Image (cartoon, rainbow over the protein chains, first blue to last red):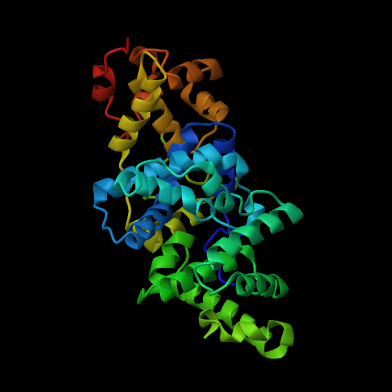
Length: 232
Length: 128
């Protein structure tokens, strides 16, 4: 897999891990560090949510939202772990959406923790617990992309079977979501969120899809996956 | 973003500070398309930080915002930043909590170029 400069095996670079550690310890200055060093990909994540709401953000709105997202990430930094493989702003996508919605006025009140938790729980801890949390989150996301829960479960199982990394699962699902939503350039939308080049996003998404297509063709148990629009 | 900013006396080859991040990574990040398309708005950051500190009832929120911004841009932990600024950890904590006036900010921080409008900090009346 192509990785952005400085990224370790988890897909998160050492500096980001250190910043999240400082945030988890309550270091308020680390909010500024996160904003300074990772404002670009966070801005891309904010823009992506705004586009899903069919709204365009001006520079002023975007800047304000990026800094608010940094505070939001600070408040939940203690629950994030690089072992899950998801970048903080991808892991906390519900929180990012909440910030955007608060500013856009789409929602009167921020979503409560109960709704935010499934997404926030993605890879919050290492080991089996993280795997279970990731699967729950994955099912949430798959609900958008596959027609029924059984198919979603089978797809989640296939992702496990093929040992597709947590980061590539997130990437592929984001990519597929954008593509299914009619985005003509899904890689251009997804790449900045993950801090990757567009070509790397396309390659990673294609590899993940090809592995699942091969699995569906070679293993009868996973054969129903071949009928999913997601793998067409 | 423009890469790592080291406010005073440092250089990018910082011997592994910040988890081993080096000049190559900063340069690579600066070249990345996401770095070119977004720039931090530090005036907004100062204002927002000051609002948060003021909401906690601190008497000197703009001082706190300025010091937090400088340490945040530097990427330092408290102890390292205090040492570089010539402050005790306790004195730095008081500044960051907005408990001390602008006159308590050491000259080494005030001479950091281009990040903080110190006139704005000085103008900030003490919060009642």
